[in-house]
Image 1 (cartoon, helix red, strand yellow):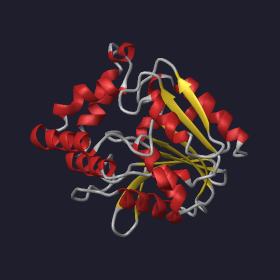
Image 2 (cartoon, rainbow, N blue to C red):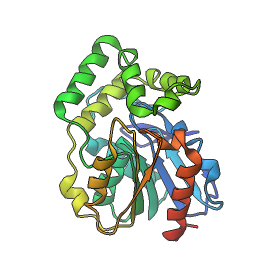
Image 3 (cartoon, one colour):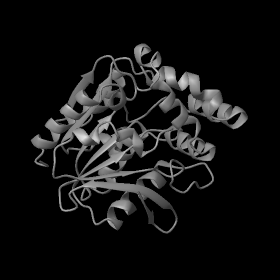
Image 4 (cartoon, rainbow, N blue to C red):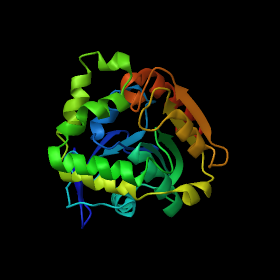
Length: 262
């Protein structure tokens, strides 16, 4: 792990693979850190330059006072890629990370050659829903939200397994200000027009029991992008990379090869 000092923020990131390989950048979901991708990264093709990072307010990255905007999250990603000398990457984003991917591709097409938007949408939820979650977290901490989040994130079968505790612990141990700040960014973001103008190679991934971004919502966003592909992973919720990492890695690897990254 390393810290990139980007001036206004300091972002924790990790690099794996070949430093001279084609760059694949991963952005995680709300309430997780870059370890979200641990089950998938070892299953990807060899020879890639794999970069993962903690968005502001999560993991070991700096946690500025909330609220945050999507523009600030996109700028963080943009500055990190510039800092690392990365251009024309494949950007893989899940949930809020997928919103970051869409907005970054619209703002800096030189940085994003292709993208995977997983369990995400051009707009997620309503302002009232997000404000209610932020207010609840402010009153009772992330523990107050945790059980409801686990229900939206995972299938019934996964919730019955001991592995659930890993992800519940990851959620409740994120900085409260970071969770609230990023929730505000989601609350205030509508990317329909920006995403509708994108034409880059895109793979959209959904889980059929996702309680946060239902499959139809993901498919609707994919349909905004000319030539995009949609893949449904059955038996998974909001984090299919956790519940079925082998299937997730397989379809991601196929897309990587099809787009010429391996």
